[in-house]
Amino acid sequence: MEPAVASGIQEPFDLIRLSLSERVFVKLRGDRELSGILHAYDGHMNLILSDVEETVMIVDTESNQTINYAKRKWEMLFVRGDGVILVSPPSRS
Image (cartoon, rainbow, N blue to C red; front, top):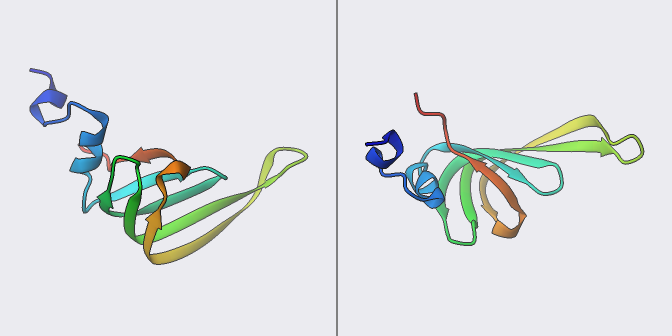
């Protein structure tokens, strides 16, 4: 039996379900990234995260190169699913 099937991962949302209460990495539209503890999600990929660190890349539009990073922290954050590009679960060794 494959390891993914043995651990209960059969669909992409299974990875998200198994990541509840764990720190996940989320990439959003607009050169934004989040790292936080996942508390809830739905089929639209709306997410509720706590202890969130947001990183915004400031890009020069003429040269298309990253100039700087801006960081801020949130105690609790609701992320609307239509802005989510990628959700990365914690690495499992």
